[in-house]
Image 1 (tube, rainbow, N blue to C red):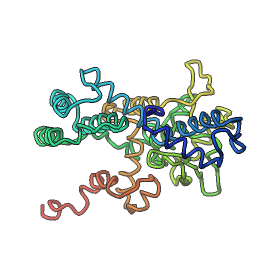
Image 2 (tube, rainbow, N blue to C red):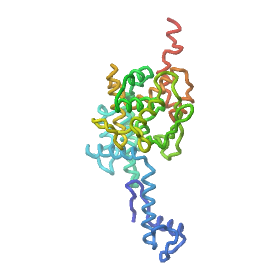
Image 3 (cartoon, rainbow, N blue to C red):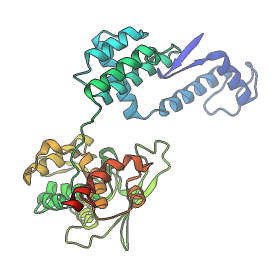
Image 4 (cartoon, rainbow, N blue to C red):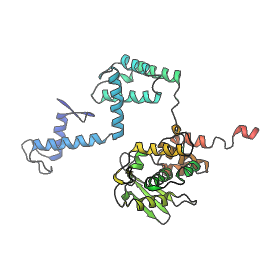
Length: 342
């Protein structure tokens, strides 16, 4: 008999029973002395199964899992099935080649493949037919991804200038901290008062978990007092004082009546705030998103001559390859070949 835990991994129950018996050093008729809340072997199995299920579920980030589910739902709604065939998957890719970006199609392939392998089925996505179809799509339509505009320091200062009222004070702190810490949207809205410490030179933020740190090793991010008139540290202090926040979520929803709520704002709200403020200062809001804060810090730092490894220390990028496109664009006029000739 085979059973599946959380629809993620298949486990043979005979191997599981053997593992449990070995771990607790007992026979099927013995009491389980070391298993909390388990009074006999049967209940020990249930407790262990629940623990396994919990940890297996945690092996994949929630956002990743939601992405898998969304991708698979799209494939199934189109008419696909699990298990599927290389011909069906290739047809799906071909029909959506001009509607979806190659990167999106690539993610769909991963999700479809995982739906097969998690059930112990050979994945059709590994076939030569599917690989050839995807290669043909890339060569025909290109692989360029949409890249949001970085929010540069000068634009950011204009965006926060003159913000007033409880919502304005919150937005100013959110935008400046998001930029200075090069935070992703999810990281920004997940910040708690217990994660921050005001120190002599500014602010230290303990980022407990991030997209590239799913095992929650954590890292500390320093945000110094600004030399100019616009300071992220002071803006955050002002927001916490005005909103009377001393615990829990830092960036919270504000009602239309100006009441600060207990819940944190959503990741989508960060994008909307960036777009709203960009539009207010005459920028094209369509070019900006929540990621513009993170990209803006990278680009602005590169323009200021900050080394790549120092930028990575702030952003948490695992490699310089991920930074290269921002740094390349930031330095496009530096030592430009045409500029040296013309």
